[in-house]
Amino acid sequence: MTKDEQQELWSTERKFVRVLFSMVDDGDLKKIGPSALAVMTVVRRYTPISGVHAFPAVKKIMDKTGLTAPTVRKALGRLCEAGYLEHIPDGTTKSKKFKVNERYVATKLDAQEDNPPKAILVADYNISKQKEINKALTQFERTGTLPENQQIIKIDSINIQINNLADGSVVSNVWTSPDSTAIREAIRHNAQNPKLADTIIRAFDSRLSEIEVQAVSSVKDTKTPDGDD
Image (cartoon, rainbow, N blue to C red):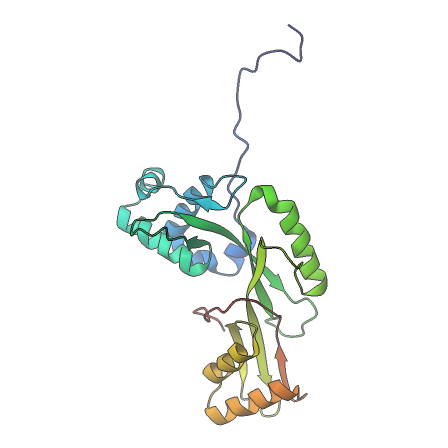
């Protein structure tokens, strides 16, 4: 038996579950809580490397985390609300299949504000496609757009910063979708009064210099998260 043919005596585990720094730094970990993080770890553990769908049973998650069934179900709900999971119905009331997402936070580098505009990009949690995902992220960093005709990553939501520079009465960071109708609705929801909202919307429409509206284009409506300053 040659050295190359020598039988292996040990096997080392080299696979891992990934958690991006932004999940900690941008507050998602605090929002979903430790139970949801434990559940997410198990779900990702059972996500195939070449796929994005996971379907571990609640009992399996209970066994691996030590959590009760109600806690696991609540945690799955929080992960869906936060965008890390998407429940995939199969026509039954007991569907356990989920699409597993990775959420990337993009920050505008040339912004002058203390809280610069941000965008959330949602990609498939698919290790085998990471090279393609990285290429798309690089394009977004350079151009603010994603490659066309691809389904693996999308812009999920944006942060619009609105400053009324004329009287200083509005400084608002709003998470919304990118289309003009949704932006106007977000302005109306966050402005101090309807008259001021109309003023900001007119400025938004005409791009007046006294009111600054910064946004990155997106493709999906999203609700304003709790706790944005």
